[in-house]
Amino acid sequence: MSTNNTMLLNQPEEGYRYNSDTLLLYDFIKSFNPKGSLLDVGCGCGILGLLLKRDFPTLDVHLLDIQEQNYLLSRNNAEQNSIAIESFTCNDYLITKFEDKFDFIVSNPPFYHTGVVKSTNLSLSISRHSSYLPFDKFAHKVTKTLSNKGYFCFCYDAKQLDILMCELLANKLNVEDICFVYPKVDKEASLVLIRARKNSKTLCKIHPPIFMYENENFSTKVQSIFAHSQTKSYTCNHLL
Image 1: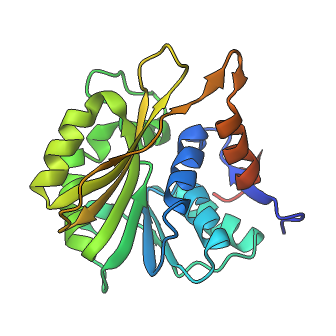
Image 2: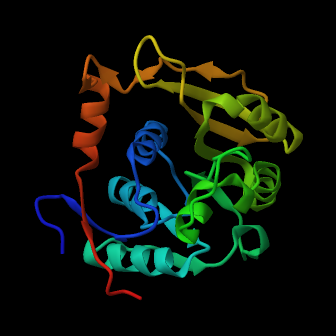
């Protein structure tokens, strides 16, 4: 069980391990005070949904991942941190049927594009490569499983913004908030954080940029996000 409000997270020795992208996305979503029901697609070890449930206890959080290892890790991490999750699902999101629609769908999806060589580790490939969850099919499924005026919050490769905007609009998901993340001030954006809303006509708000590093250290903004998340990881391979 966690102590001192620190969230302890089992991570696989081999396979996908969460990174700063998820923590930046968590902070982005948190700023909108999510309410109602929330589905985390591709939850991995459960970090995003667990952090949001910790900060917003009235949220009904559902975790889904296609990989059994991640399904088991997320269940274990929820139990270890005494966080009540509404449901855990081990299945392909694109073919999963849901009884009810969600007010929020959140995700740090696989976004390595076609030209990137896939890892020989299948678990890593599934977690990183967009061929396992093509964005056009993802956006189509999201709009089918969101409630009217529901929100889709996610992060993605900033260089693929044109594809994202095209597919979101095609599926009646209007981008209301967008934030670009840069490695440093003089570098190109590497990540984009997006909040889209179903059947919305609100104009897009472009948030101040986030810079990961100032000189050779994490920026003050990023340090504050890491500090608020209060996560600590350790390797655990006994679940499978």
